[in-house]
Length: 353
Image 1 (tube, rainbow, N blue to C red):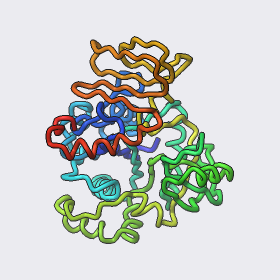
Image 2 (image 1 turned 120 degrees about the vertical axis):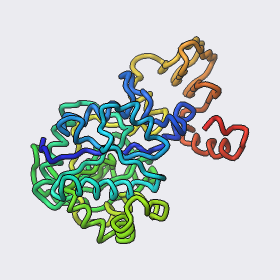
Image 3 (image 1 turned 90 degrees about the horizontal axis):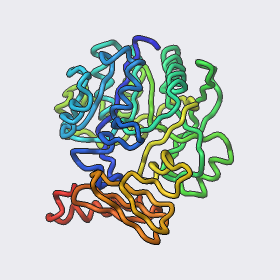
Image 4 (image 1 turned 135 degrees about the vertical axis):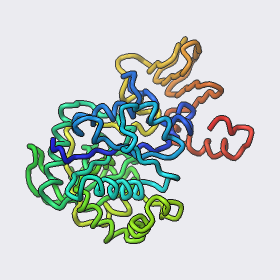
């Protein structure tokens, strides 16, 4: 791995679909959900540290209310490598500001990678090889590289990337130009995408030379860049709230995709736990559980003294955390965010957020 590579962990997310376990001061990236005993943030940092030649080149960007939690979870991270946004403005400001700061410190030829803090990745060796290929591609070409995950089913919760012409082999992996990005499609469209064999899921992982990305951002997001370059962090409250996909990836003609060779899951909601941990057992039990005629259930309790008792239930999720018990059908877990709106609107439930 090139010593000029600087990985950045995007750690400002909320993870609301994992409520009530994920809350404002304890978002999804601070949780251990994969059975490893480490939080998702810690697992991501451990995975990236060797590629960054240790902690000195690893960066994290996060929200102000999470900064102390980041320092507690990653005590080895140099203080100067933690960028704290005064308020969340989505991923485009986070990526642009961080890339500007990295370019100031290391130069515009530095290869930068952005990685969500809350993803699960298997096959560490394959991950390293894929990342090596992405860094090689970004080093030798003016390219903004994204990693595409081969779809396992017609998912409607992911963005899709359509690959175009091949541009060469990098680290034994074929790279392609991106024809288009598509936001979360309906089921029929997702099935059409899978049938072509040309589409992959958007992993949200990006690799590029700092100068290349900054030049493209100045072209495609001029208002954002002008405000950041003139006023820095002080401009944050006035920055447009937009994603890096919309601000840059959907507009640039330098987007390339590398199909990934490692196992990946974005752990988008509680059903992801079943995908990771369910074996031959009828239920996924991350709690003391006494059950009768219960099958296809996901059961979680944060207190090891709590007991969940079920009778005659199928395909449900039960989460017990502190003063909240959530019971929901597994096919309705996407509605957790809607319930949270009702919780926010009622002052007596403020302590549950």
